[in-house]
Structures are given as C-alpha cells and as structure tokens.
Amino acid sequence: MSLNSINDLAQTIWDHHKANDPSKRTLVNISGIPGSGKPTLARLLAESLNRIFIQHSHSLQQQGASSDAEHSSLSPNTPFAIDIPMDGYHLSRAQLAGLPDPETAIHRRGAAFTYDATGYFQLVQQLAQPINHDSPEIFAPAFDHATKDPVENSIEITAKTKIVILEGNYVNLDREPWKEAAELFYGICVDEESARWRVESTDDLNAEDILGHQVEGVVGVVLQDCT
Image 1 (cartoon, rainbow, N blue to C red):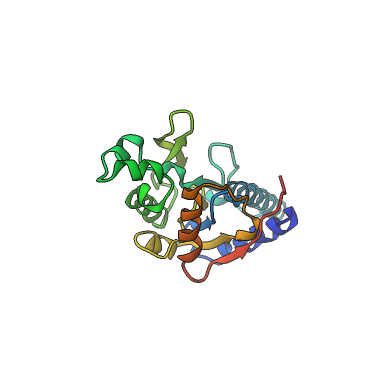
Image 2 (image 1 turned 120 degrees about the vertical axis):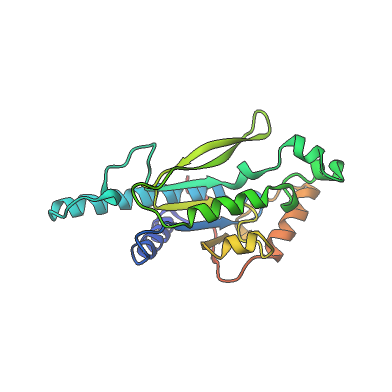
C-alpha cells in the first residue's frame, strides 16, 4: 500500500467521521497476522488524518468560520487522531504464570487467550461513549519491551482526540468479547500477502486463528514498504 493509498484511506475515514455524530469518536481497528505491518499502517494513517484535520481547520479559519473545540489547535499531547497498539493488553508474565497451564501460556504468548480481552473491551466501550469538552481523559496501557510487560495508564486520550485507531492481531476476531468490540469500529484487515512470515510454531498458530476468524465487513488492504 503506497503513501498515496494510505492518504486516500485516511480521507475515506475522515469523510466517514464528518458524516458521523459529532458527539462521538470514530473508532478504526486494524488487524492482521504477526509481521503484516499493522503498527506502520496505524501510525501513517494517524499522521495523515492529523494533516487533513489541520488543513480543514486552516480552511475554516480562512473562510472566517468560528472555531470550536474540534477545530482548536493540535499539540503532540492532544492529537486529533491517535494510534493505539493492542500490545498493552498482553497479560503480564505474572498473570501468565498464574494460568492453569502456565508453560503453554508463556510459550503461546501472543495467542488470543494470552490477552486481557475484557480490559480491551472496556477501553473500546469507553471510547464509544458520547463526548463533550468536559469529558474526562481515558487511559490505555502500553507495552514495555524492556520489561516484557504492560504498563498501565501510559496512553492518554482526551476529548479533543476524535479518531482512535487501534491495531492488533485480534481486534477483528469473531469471538467474544473481541467480536462485540469490533462491531463498534470501522475495520481494516492487513492482507496476508504483505506479511513478513516468521518461522515459529506460535506465530503460525496465531496467524491461522487470526485469518480464519475475522469478523465480516472489514476493509482489506495490502501494506507495502512505505516508510
């Protein structure tokens, strides 16, 4: 997927957002197998959407339109669009060790059952609630690759952030609670042809689960090297 195609996809998401209820965020999810480029696509989409927002705001200012909360200035801490990886919802190593079969859980870390699916669903429910300028901040966890564990409340989403892109292996999985969460999204699935396959049994098993159990109605894309 070229940068032009990413910009086109961002424009489609923007148009969807502008046609949506202004009191609600537009939620976008990007799924795909390990190595398929989900974080890159999410980051580039968020960057493109923030550029579109700035251009739109400047256009309104030139037309003399009054500024409101949505058209206030962006800052790195309050972006209009933000991308959030699902990695923060990995179960911690301590939680994995407490599962009935810890050896399998640790070996299969990255499989759907090794994530805090309930916590992820609760985040999506919060993001889907109507918002106004008084709406409280929402916090999501991030993943610390140094400690190999999630870190709570690392990512802040304010009321000024109107488009949220969540990316991960299972955000379009057709089993609960992933499925119910996915129904609140504008879904994108990174095509398997673009994946950089890693020859590991755990990734093969996870890829089969991801590709074989996608919810219906997601947009399929092929991501090429566009960094």
